[in-house]
Length: 221
Image (cartoon, rainbow, N blue to C red; front, side):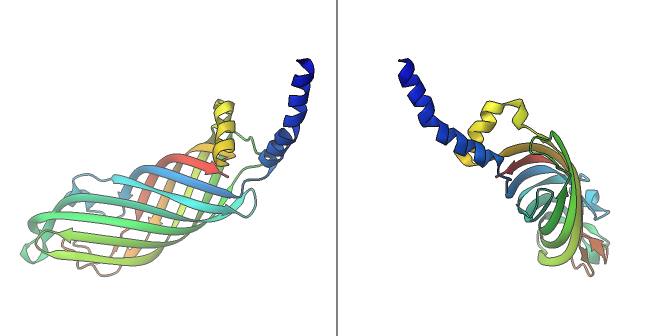
């Protein structure tokens, strides 16, 4: 029996060594899923939608050029419902209004990571934004478009591997995920509409971006 056990261990050694080598490799990709609150830059937002903020969700995929620097793409979306107005009738309340937007971000991000098992990692980045928007006011048609802009974000991520090493090993063996993090993040987006024909917003120039606060999960593989 002892000889059989020794033979089994010897047979497993190459596989264990290969797994150890794979874990020692630097992850090349990061995938984020996130959700939180968005506060629009439109000053009179709460007049039409009741609340100053709304929910926002999305995710990103980035390639790690180095351990500290990565380039990626982020897609987000938010929407809200409220009451529109009629500019031709002293902004009298009109029918319901539906507003939705989808920022598409191309970004560079720097992470303050210096070891694979670092617990806390601060990060910051930003880049180009293409803001797609659509507004529908009952009885007054649909306004849609897209504008270029920019964004900036910063946050702090917490390594979850150390909380459950067994689950972390299973994530790697099953899905190739080397590290999992929980993160909190603040993001600012700026994209200006010069002329507004919208029935909901009386201003002639508005920032259809705003401020976001997120929580989410980051997977490195």
